[in-house]
Length: 151
View 1: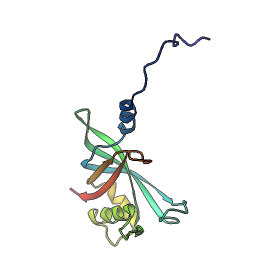
View 2: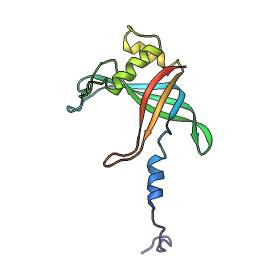
View 3: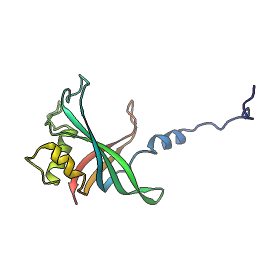
View 4: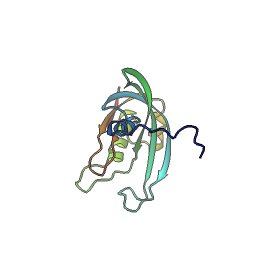
């Protein structure tokens, strides 16, 4: 069988290789200045979601000066926001609702249509507090947005 000379033993993939691959696209924990580049709106269709039937906007954000191999870089980041105020089972405001309220506050659009909040975010530099949550049990490593604040 022709395989381009690949019948040699291959190096094994190590756990360190797996860990690095899983964390490679994630943002290190920190507070970063950023600018919303775009957003997409959708209605949540998952019936088990507390946001079922409600509108959510996915923000695409450029985060500035994210450390990557000791060199600051601009990195893409995504966060979901909504004007719908939804609470979790424990009574806390759900993350997209909390972030939507923070976005309205820090773009000075409280009381205005949420579409105006989203449009204003496109021209307003903000701070995004990002947390890296490592893989645990059945959950993969991922980023969480802890806060959106003004500069």
